[in-house]
Image (cartoon, rainbow over all chains, first blue to last red):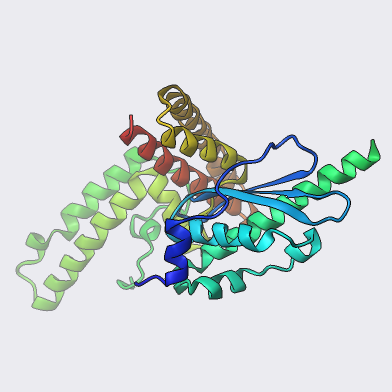
Length: 132
Length: 169
């Protein structure tokens, strides 16, 4: 199995590794786990409450190279998008961009799940914030 | 008996249950071992000898599979077409993340804590599985079996996690 240049680049130089303050109301956190392999991925976004644009995105993934590359790419794509645009990112786009081999497509599914979980967390916090 | 897809329970003349009497299984195993032993059949034709050889092989597989409650549950699930949930249990994700972080930071204290936690969870899961197995036997049905499948998957995941954690201790 040979990996694409893009994948190896994201694996060797992962973008936006890190962590944001979970308690910040502008931050959404998605924590997901992968089937079988036990990979875990944390992906966070920081959203400008006025515009709804994602200002920062970061991740920390414990898993294989494909899981790391998928989440690294996802954070790059998230920055500058609105939260609704972010929800349109599909795992198939990630898989295509990284030329993931079929057995590794589930890693891109994990990244999509992480995006959705992070946005959902942000929206939940936002709703709670507005209600107060 | 169809030798290609043998029903291990039927092989021993036992009901398809998750909880079985271990002593009874063993008794039947020795009984069948004697009857199926190839040496008993050496005077008969080559076809009978071959058959007894195959049956003896199935007997050993069947005994190994049914003896252990864990492999027994997995076997029953598989033969009922129930998928064993191969997922990171949702409520465990944070724990697994924290454990990985502790590994990375070589935080011995956090690792020991994680190991204790996983061991406790595994014990709880085993107890829950026992209960779910008894419930299925009392009232077999797809729902009860699905519950067993979920717990078998959870136990498998925790066992792997704990083995990995202990190998780093």
